[in-house]
Image 1 (cartoon, helix red, strand yellow):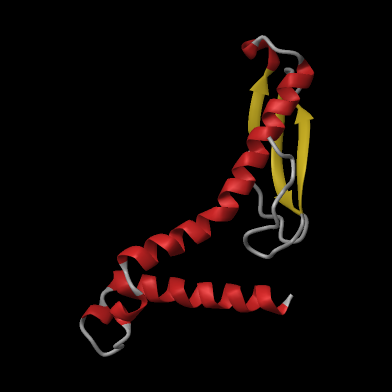
Image 2 (image 1 turned 90 degrees about the vertical axis):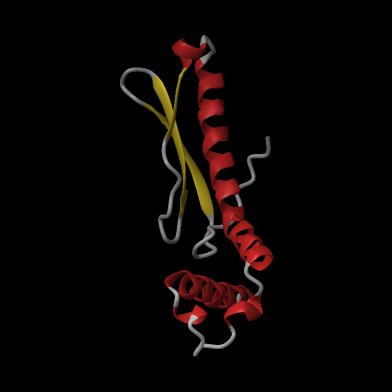
Length: 125
C-alpha cells in the first residue's frame, strides 16, 4: 500500500502520519493535517494479539490510518456523484417551488453551493 498522503479534504493542507506506542505495548497511529489539524481516528494494533513483530504492528496501524485518510479524501466526490445521479442540478432550480422549500432539497442545494466554493478555492491555489 502506498504511504503517499493526499492533501487535507477540508483546507488542502499537507498531512502527516503520527505513530507511537501506548505504555502497554500497543501501537497507535493517526493522520493529521498540519494546517487545520483535522485528523483520522486513532488506529490501535497490539502486536501480541496479532502475533506479529512490533515493526509489523507499527506498519499495520500506520497503513490503516493512511488508508482511512486517503479514502475519506474521496468521500466528498462520491457524495457529489450520488447527488448528481439522484438529484440532477435542475431539480431545485426554482427557489419559489414547494419542493425547494423542503429541508432535504435545501440541504442538497447547500451541498452544491459548497462544492462550487471548493472548486473555486482549488482553482485559486
